[in-house]
Image (cartoon, rainbow over all chains, first blue to last red; front, side):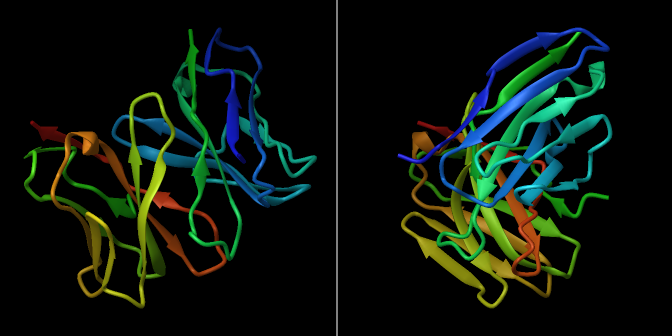
Length: 114
Length: 113
């Protein structure tokens, strides 16, 4: 079955370190998204991509970067981790014009920055 | 500026009764709305959606109502079951083909047996 996976599921790091969170989907979807979930804020869009070599900033992109070298993967990099980036991160994918018209989410990565 | 608002952080409902979750939005460009359900330690899963050309969409125990003039939508679950206990997120999208979603802050629904 097609799926979307994230790794690691849990990560503890120190302030100032570079961290990369992996997202891999086997749906062959063109669209991929990264969100963070924080209490009182719901899910907020960090970066998104509509295809290989395409990346776009979301509403909370500062301190994060992504790259899309193939259809299946959209890794999220925290350039220099900060305590404010402690959060749960979700990756999602979708395909335009599909039925049902929705995004499919991975299981999440809980990141703690000490 | 919160464009999608879920003003009730939590809701408790007796098993078998109706659960009504509410969502308000401010952006008049939103034309497609979705509800997601999220269990702890899992990603959100799609529940039901509605296009702005409709005012109601039903799928089994779940019905979504859209009032465009009031910029309000609601999710009705009837009858409510213990497995419905989860956090529910409302989401909205502007312009068909623009795939970005804007999410509300979520409502934690607890079904009391």
